[in-house]
Amino acid sequence: MPARGQMHARVMSGRGHLGDLEHGIRARLTADLRWALNHLYDWPDLRHSPLLQLLGCERQADPARALKTVLLEAIESFRPDASVSTHARAQRAYLLLRTRFVEQFSQKETAVEMGMSLRNLRRAESQALGALADVLCARFQLDQPCPAPTTDVAPTETAEAAPPASPANEQEMNWLRASLPSEPTSADELLHQVLKLFRRTTWGASVQVTCQVRSGLPRLVVQRVPATQALLTVLVALAPFAKEQPLAIGVSLGAMYGVINCSLRHAGAGVAEKASEQLGMARQLLSLSGGLLHVASTGAEMDFSVTLRLPAEGGTPILFVDDNPDALRLLQQLVGQSRYRFVGTSCPDKVLDLAQEHNVTAIVLDVMLPSIDGWDLLGRLRTHPATQHLPVVICTVLPHESLASDLGASAFLHKPVTRNALLAVLERVTEMAPTPGD
Image 1 (cartoon, rainbow, N blue to C red):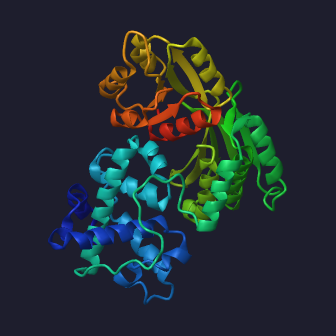
Image 2 (cartoon, one colour):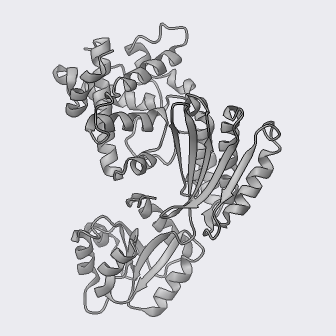
């Protein structure tokens, strides 16, 4: 394996030894590499990877385990020396690869963790995977096109709400997403139910759990049953590592989320890997409510924590612009008892100021406004530095969905608007918006 210091130039250029290879070879290897890393802990699927033959793993007693070891060693070779700044590109490339594929964060979670937009994260991920492919080419002297993948699952660069799921699992998640509504729930009630269930498990009598919930927190807006099962799954995943230390649960408030932190002192190394299947399932369950899950280990004795972020009631400010007061009142009612906080105005001149004052996540805009044409206002929002990053939803009686898209709108709603249609569009566009740091 190349020395760590030699990785820096490859990370910066994304070319290395592949500069003399055909572009198609590199693209094929990078695509196969992405697929294998997304299935790093899913060994039945990993056994179908074309990299097994390419990297000489198929001759090992356990080919999937051997491939996993090769990939982890390749990622670890990117770890820069301690003297390298945490803001250096080499350091960030290593952190990206480790967070995305070793700890199995989704793209959205990794973007939040690293303070990047989703678009920039995807670009940086492709560059890092290209550099990782260079390392493997150099190590295994690859100079032939990669065999075509034998799996039915195609590599993809789209954002993931959670780690890849089996078709049956995905079908179940889709059914839950469509059939269970999100509803306001207090953190106290959620934790009470989770601890009640945990005490019935085999770990309930031997593992001490301590809870600290800040008073005055807003309610969480979640699919209650999946959220309960997600938190229970996290506790069960961490329980075997509790040893003599209690599992500590703390609940606080972030910018738009209720934050539930489950921490364990002196957990030892390898918790994320050993509990990856359970933590992956918890991520999928949380995604049904628009929630996120982060894992982290710190200190010489490997203190370990799992942080769940669940949407807080009224935690996501949305600016509604409509000159009709009745329409604004209706929109306010439609987003009531949801994760969205209504900010409304009938005055187009106040839009920029309100967007900045309330740090809104999206704007819902009517186009028939006094003093200014709504299409002109859309153009201003798309170019102004304070709002150009915000999704804008056009909401009108006019049949101009194609025009809205052509002029830069992120989505379109036709009046009259229903609650389900409005919440569905807001959920979709706020996933595209930058997430304020907690």
